Length: 206
Image (cartoon, rainbow, N blue to C red; front, side):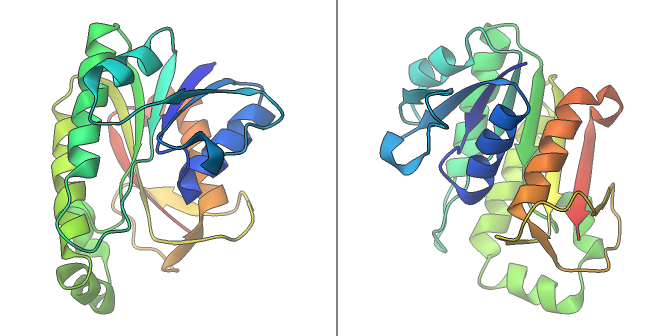
């Protein structure tokens, strides 16, 4: 499968790139700074650009079979990088007649809010309020896109190893508040191959 990965230099994005190459996929990474990403011995095509540049996004999407959006921001202040970037990706996909999209969001977004423990709700309502607003807007754009989308909502991300042993599903109450980025990447790639997950927002936790 020909995949383009946005947010490829982030923790989750790097795992998606690595596992995609291991899985035999043809990988394109959309990056602002190529030096921040391992090219996996020349097996990754890099397109340098800004997610807010529709022409650069369209170039990256052209000729692909599927898109993975793992955009993020470490800023605690108000941001719309996920929303605006995802809207540009959606428009490029429509222009290029590409349908399959997997987007990384966060547990607690949308209807999964009710599955959060109280401590997590307080965190999202205070320190992570801006990120939650951006995720909500991002997911709304995805749902309204008309594409074949799947949303992945991780619980707290860690740098642990890929285990392949995790819980996932729509609006599940999880036993744990954490999940490794490697396991999130594993579910992303499995979702691309599973048409039964189209149109679903999946929480994932260990």
